Length: 168
Image (cartoon, rainbow, N blue to C red):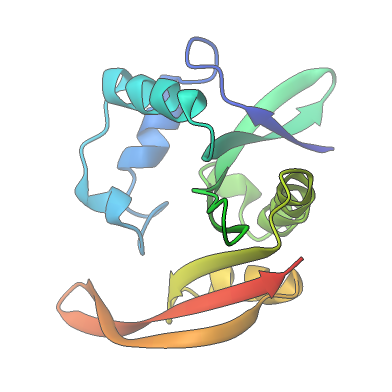
């Protein structure tokens, strides 16, 4: 069973979590790969996000034998109050849970949370070679709305950035 849970900086920020953030193979298409993450700065980030009124960070957890296994994160926000729109971002950090449908399920759950927060439109951005993220967005009914030409640099090559959106 997949559960989204607000991250507790004292209980949920572990060496394992920090190792995901520093693993370039977990974030090959994200700016996270350029940052150096530590227990201290990840805890501070979670504390700061938890104080926000328009950004919501959740851990993606799998319940097994009454134990919650943290496998990734999903973020909703910032929520634009006037336009009632928001952005989402997500990752699965535990590699053994990749390509098993958990990101797809997490997005289904974050859409329900967004609806409760009166969000009417969700967007997700991804580089054109992030085929997994594109597939996850499309499985959740997101449609490609924009292509930003030569927007991102990965290695020594430039790639288009795609914006997917869904009216909810």
